[in-house]
Image (cartoon, rainbow, N blue to C red; front, top):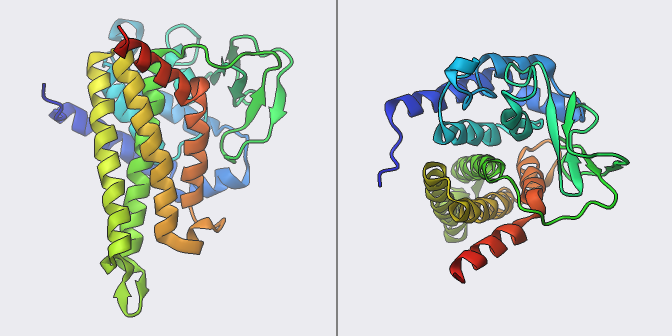
Length: 291
């Protein structure tokens, strides 16, 4: 089975990246960090106009009419850009919640005991009654906890895969940041990338990225629950460990508030807790192997 992107898919990925660089570059990212908890409605409508939320909606219903592989490419770019907001929930609500496809309505969903972006959303799917604010490690992902809700329920497979695609995007970006810093930062008169320990960190980053990429792209083609669970585990590892290794390459500089590396790590941590965390995917894979 071939997983090379075709011309249309490469154009889609390039178009989404160009849109996000124009509408949510580093300046907009830092503005969002300084004003947490607020959805940029203009950005949300721009995403809707570009078809981000209606990507898998049939053309007869006003959508773009593409499939899950194309949605994965779009969400990978969103993860790479650290795009904030309940992107997965709004994407899944396109066609069922009025205004979601066009970016006019912000939709979030109860995810076990947690809800992201509860106060900023126009529509909440699930029972969020009595939800209490929870301090989030990620300044760009406000959280609420629903009392009495139980974690560990099976996550919607498509939501799980799109979350894995976001994690893949983060993994790709932190690899880029680590390599860029290793090439330009000098110690003892040489770029730090010339030292073996840094070379090994960057090589490990790339290996985890490519392994996760193959798994995520394959799961987008097969849409099999077990493939999606495996993709989620590999993407979570690539994002979290990749961001930590990127911090290691940057040294103390990576931990400063002015740097972006720690934002990628914090977002990866929060995403890794969605859908009950990795334990749900591990149990699904174990059950499949035990058949």
